[in-house]
Length: 50
Image (tube, rainbow, N blue to C red; front, side, top):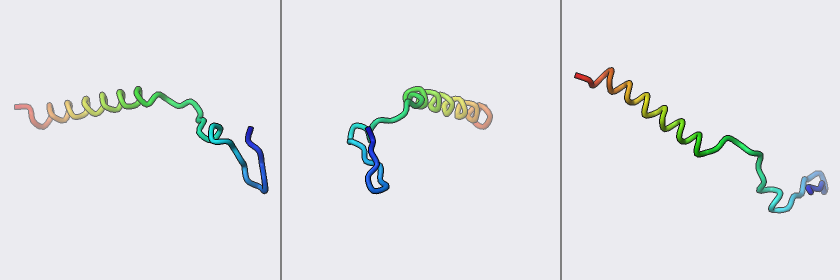
């Protein structure tokens, strides 16, 4: 458990590395890549279709 010494919070290395659960990085990458492909596809149809 974190302790306070001389107005500083002291944690072990394991405690310092622990993080709050966040959205999945894989899901974020997949969604952003799909959105980029969709936007580029629309731009290609608008500007380069003959």
